[in-house]
Image (cartoon, rainbow, N blue to C red; front, side, top):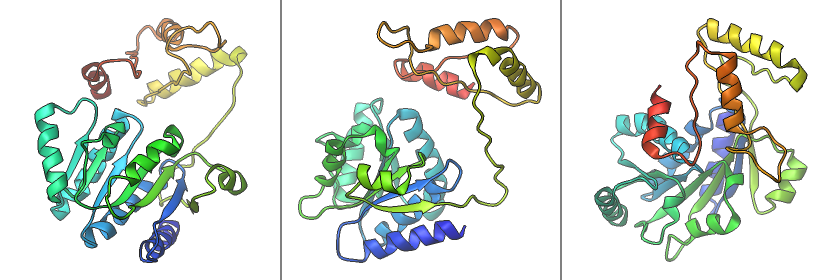
Amino acid sequence: TNAQKKVIREIYQDMKSGRQMNRLLQGDVGSGKTIVAFICILLVIGGKAQAALMAPTEILAQQHFANLRKYADLMGLSIALLTGSTKKAERRKLHEQLQSGALKILIGTHALLEEEVRFQHLGLAIIDEQHRFGVAQRSKLWQKNEDIYPHVLVMTATPIPRTLAMTLYGDLDISVIDEMPKGRKPIRTTHQFDSHRLQLNAFLRSQIEAGRQVYIVYPLIDESEKLDLKHLMDGYESISRAFPDVAVSILHGQMKPEAKEFDMKR
């Protein structure tokens, strides 16, 4: 889209300015941030450097890896995934390839911040869902290079008014993708009260019967003494009761990677 082109131009200007880029890229889900990130990665690899993309969860890191790998493979570029569940032998190989410069693109979670993860020359650090990482974590990525800071691109799908963004991210220049690729359906957001639960369930039923899937997000896994919020275990039981004939599954951060993987495949 034209919005993507505009944003890529802004990033490219930053990259060749001779100064370290610190830019926030904001765009709705589906606006095409990932392909913009990939094109920026290509600019960096073209300049004989490496790129890293850090995501807050293993599932998100795996999604990015699966998406970007399609493009990287077509172009013969080496790409790897590093998370908490990456096996030791695999890590060793990965560390060697990073330091020799053979590995060009590394996607991962907080595992990227570990001391032993060293690059030959990190040119670009991309951080997805920026609000899930602290400033200290972000700066750890900067220190992966001995002599020169890498460019930093932080991405978020959370719409932040420009004035607020200036307060939250005063150190960042801001780029916005404010246009959707053709063919994307508009997203409808509605607000319902608990008293409308029966109507909501009827709506969910109609979506399931139309062959679609539903996911429901809860703020907590278990009941909390301090917070009066609906929690996942309670929600799971009530949804299972409301839809006894439908396969219902749970996914949360405390589950083992194999269990998560099993449910994601389902």
